[in-house]
Length: 315
Image 1: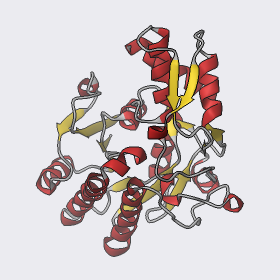
Image 2 (image 1 turned 90 degrees about the vertical axis):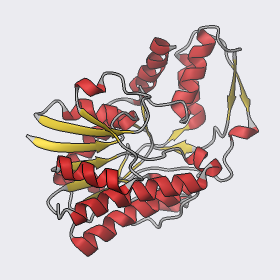
Image 3 (image 1 turned 45 degrees about the vertical axis):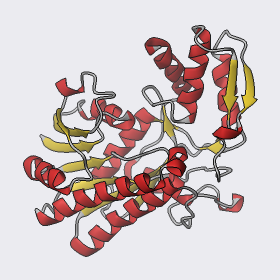
């Protein structure tokens, strides 16, 4: 039985990862900071309420658990919010990971494999001729959040190079599905549509940039990829994870609107536009596939329907 630590267990990806890990005989520990999303997770895992930016708390946790595997998911994860909170985004994301890696180094836990979850946002604005994006694509971050994730990515590499820590790095592209907060585009659309369906909002949907194209994967496929790459990936290496398909935000909205029986007007809101945005992201996940055999399995239409139904059930 493996002892597994998941930081940010009560978050979007963390809660889905827990369900996946519990399909096998694993002892799962998890960290959380906010009671939001706590639900019944405490019945399935051993939870610790910890501020990962406090190094003594992190050291004590790692010393107690002595994990075989760590999935480091906890982060301030919104690119849009990072423009309003650049200092908090960079400090929280970098210091939390640094405390985990330092605890592993000081406790000499060199056999612990750690998944460092970066993001495709580190690639930023990519020339159309360089699509799809592989791991050799130059980093060109376009938000404070992306800068924090470059730092997290390279800290994992540095602690592998300097101390031999077993860090496997991943750069996941957009992932969505039931349970994601409305700080992100797909659940934001879905929540507003459901509010209109239930008469809680006028039938007008305010939107930002609908022209951007993103590579979306269902979160349930994404966490399956996390487990496979931490098991089979090479420490020190980095792997892109995505669907290999580009979805225009406007087309996603159209698909969601067709799943509703309400007539809804769409209008642009300048306040929802970012200071800088990336026109298109498409993932080349061939390196990941070659190592693990992973491919996305859940159709995007199902992801969208499940997301809508999630909001219909809770609003």
